[in-house]
Every structure is written in C-alpha cells, then in structure tokens.
Length: 250
Image (cartoon, rainbow, N blue to C red; front, side, top):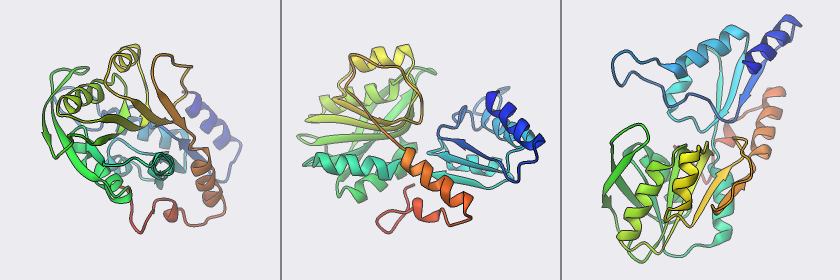
C-alpha cells in the first residue's frame, strides 16, 4: 500500500516516468490456479502497480519467469546469481555438486553448475501441505561431496531442510544453501536451527532482524540494483546485467 500511495503521489505531481523497484516481488508464488477458487495474486499485484501509475518495474529473481507476462509495461528482471558466484568462488569449494531441491529449480541449478564447474544433482519432493514437504529420491552422486542447494525463495524452509536431511543421509560432506530471497518465518528459523544446513547464503532483498542460531550469510545486491537504476535512467542497456560467462541464468 505504501508503494501504491507513493506512485500515485508521483503521478499526480506529473512525474515523467515512474519505475517501481521491487527487489522481492511479493505474492510471487501465487502465479496460477492450482486448485479451484484460489486467487492469482501475482497477477493482482501486477494490475495494482499499473493502476497506481508505474511505467516500468525492476525486480529480481521472480519465482516464475512467466510473471513478467502479467505486465503490459516493461519489466527488467535481474538475477542475484552474479553476486552469489563472487562469494562462492572465494570459498573455493572442492568436489562441489549443485543440487536443485525440486524439479522446478533445475534450470537455476544447471546455470550455477556451469559457472562453478560443478556436478549437478536433483532431489525429488512430494508436497504434503503448504508448509510440509517430503523428499525421498536423489538423482546424481553426492556421497563425499560438498553440496550447494540453490533456490529462489524460502519462507518455512521445509523444502531446504528436508532435502538437506536426505543429502546428509546419502553421504554429502557439507550442505550449503544459496537462496535469493529468505523471507523467514518463525517456523523457518526453527527448522534451520535444527537442520543439516551448514550455511545459508542469501541477499538483502528482504529486510530481516538479527538472527541467532543460524549460520546466515547476507550478500548485498545494492550495487546490482543501483547499476540497473542508473542504466534505466540514462536509457542504456540493462541486458548486460543479465549476462555472465557468455550466457544468462535461468
């Protein structure tokens, strides 16, 4: 609501162009009707942004790429991956395997594996409820290896902690997780404190209070967003910010 009110104020003050900068796009998970009589809230938020007067949207790591199609205005979709890569390369992890904790994140995991010159594996999950998942199969070799799980968003940490437990059972040496948006609830924090995850790497796309009992590394995406804002303002290309090592993260 605060964002909509500010956009409306700027529009009424005759702003030439209004760009809504959303490091984390709220309600992104509700992007389709997966059962009868549920809203498509990601589309509703897009409609509200346009109705308020936004001319352009700048966001990062959408839960689903298709959300860009909910807008009839330009959407610049950035990725936290380059910031993550810089940090992970400094760690110099040997025998690394990148793991997707579900089928939907396989493209992202493949992009990480390519840049980090690592192996690739996937964990199959079955969702039991909105906050509870069950993992039972690992496709790929993780025994005696350092494992990096990658995902775009975690809230209750059910997917990550369940996958980490299975990976440890299958012989993984260390389990790290790289998540673009850590919107951690009390349930998620409690699960992480009891989990097999050695380090959770995330960004400052979401404001969080100090967290104790979790090995949490927060990387800043301010430089990435700042460069994108500057290029939008000067009508320069934003495309090169999407690219790394000759390709684009998926």
